Image (tube, helix red, strand yellow):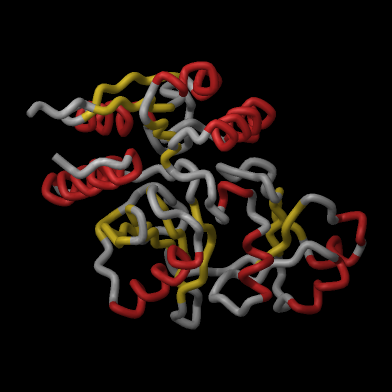
Length: 279
């Protein structure tokens, strides 16, 4: 008996000018591989709501920061949830998908994150440093990020819909990539001033436990997540962000074997989301 191929609407802004990355190259690679097992069409994020009901699942990939089209994205999300559309990543995520307010929750719960506040009266909870980072709760791609001195943060008027963190003099940044809740690979930027000049990183068991803790905390059964962390001066890892909406994957930094293994795992995950066994 011949099985029916399932269909995917793949959402990407191929022309988005990302800093230090080429979204289009990554999505051309992924779509070419997904077509091996799925019928697939590519659309711009602004077209997703109108087209999504004609497909078995919607895969949201390198679609750019949604804050540049927030109202349209919110409408897509609301309609997809109401109509039971299968979206990958699942829309239940508690990380960047819902804004960066989770950093406050994780700070309060004692997770290993860069300490984060959003009120002047909590400034004393942050370590005293020369410079602080102020960023929008709905920020992405460093849009709206500022570095400010402590004296500016004693005024309640300096707050609003923003988060405040101490500026960390980290040794390097490292990212851990997961499909569903399973670790796939890790990459790091050995030079702090070159965020996207990534190299292979071999995580220790402690590193993997660190990253796994955040993925297990999140509410996504099917999807791709990237746990971004920094190595603090004391040697510990601290969470920078939990990217669970449309994380760039830096697949060009992987070996062909690692890339093939990752794509195979994504295919299996999509079959699971759609509700069929992998052929």
